[in-house]
Image (tube, rainbow, N blue to C red):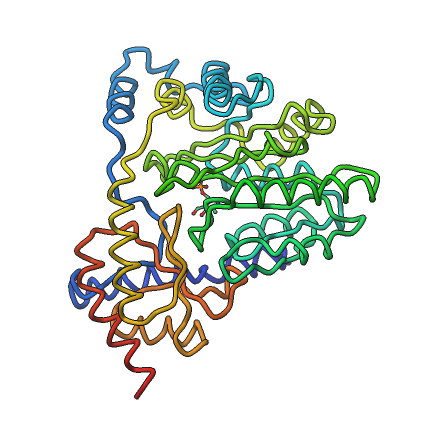
Length: 394
Ligand code: PLP
């Protein structure tokens, strides 16, 4: 009667949503202070002042028809050219606005990119740990996900990646800074990955694409460099989003950038337009396209996340938890003390501490702690994390 897969994915909340809802209920029953919600990646720092001012100016613009009208389906020329200029000045990549496509966040960018590339039965290589929605987009596009495991430091296991490439491999999806591990892939890793994919593309006689999912690009602590994938590998699409970097997740704005050196780049761009159309995306929100055009290059306040990350990392490792120091994003991926991530999440949940089992990210044995929260939540949760840790030695 209904589409089985749609019914299946629509009938269950994702674990993240389920935990978040549980937190809301518990807060209602026991008060806000009895919930330590580390479940969801909602930015906790205010929208940058310049962005707020741009929103206010546009909202008060007398020409409300122009502000709120449809744009062309690929997005307004003004937003696309501001973005193309930004990419050129930051990464030196000579990209024209004709290869920028405005989207409703990275989610739409990913779904559209995957649909644009996917022919029935194509394989998409997903590098664990990965954002669970990738697999949803691949399956609903008629493709097949192939998971590649990770190294203990959360790098991509490149030997494993090489071994899973087949003549059906259409693309590899990478995400750096990574959700859920906080890992930033080094230039060396990106270069090795590019060499492997160049060789494999030659072997199979057609290009393997890379979809670089980059909603956390601006959230980097320390001096880690986030290499711009299309400067290393030609057949590349970058899915960018302003959700995390400008604290605008509910406004749904981002873009796809198609590398000018990609195989038949302009035809690929047309397929992106087609996929956006077929998925019902008429255009990205007009007001926020204008905001982005006015605010290209604005930087978020990352000091709060940096402090939260250090507080949490130091606090947890002092207790005895094992985790890799995050270089970016706002997540810490913690090894479950007893090895069972669901058990760890459930013991934490009993105390009101909401952390997400890594199983959904294709990484059993870990839990994700999102530290985009108020600092006091981390401070108050640390004694509870200690209690949970100690419960394993009882
Ligand atoms: N990709 C990753 C790795 C994410 O963590 C998220 C959101 O949490 C997204 C994509 C989607 O972000 P949005 O659609 O809000 O831009």
